Image (cartoon, rainbow, N blue to C red; front, side):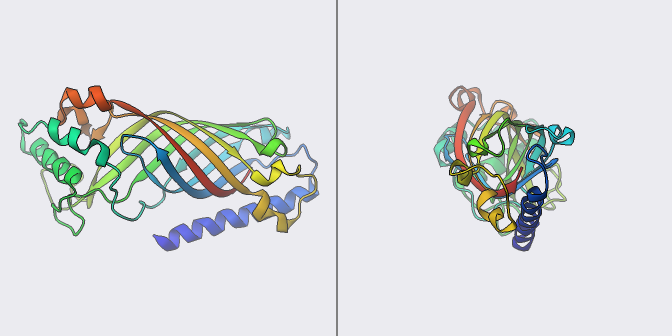
Length: 271
């Protein structure tokens, strides 16, 4: 997985170098038709299950196909490999989850799911693997639109409007036939992101506009800095494919039904 992350970084770096050098031989109005980035995001403020880790984004600049100065297009964003390390950022809601777990379930599958939730939020080993019963890493995907009226000046500000979900895997599910997806080593607590906004800039473009670019400018002029906001919905969360509401009682959602996450992202990319 580490090699895959390094490979993705160098793919985006190479594409950025090519795009940067190529702009030296094109008119100012001709924009690259593609957008790509690879970097690290960290949620600095958020009460309910904030996540952090490496992210990859690719998109198509539809406006660039018509040789305009604008960027207007669509993008997708995901994490190729789960972030490494125990995810202990659930501590703020641990007590609320444990207190409101619905222990009495109608069948073996739902009873097993409740047991996994209990172990996960207590950080207790369980299930059939070394990390069984515990949150380990996180996944992430988004889809949305990208907009930038001045991509080569004013810091290259670009707005991304997106939706998606955060996924927190609980390990140890392999071979437990009572669970859905028992052929995998983990099952997901999936938390929808109803709306996300990300404002990205090229910090070095605040110092000067990109008039004539050279290949060696790529590292500085394709360094991206972002701030983002995500509105998540625990009310619509699912666990192992079933609504979380089936396993956690209403008082939990009255207190933690939704949350706002704020964070920063440093990436290398091109647009």
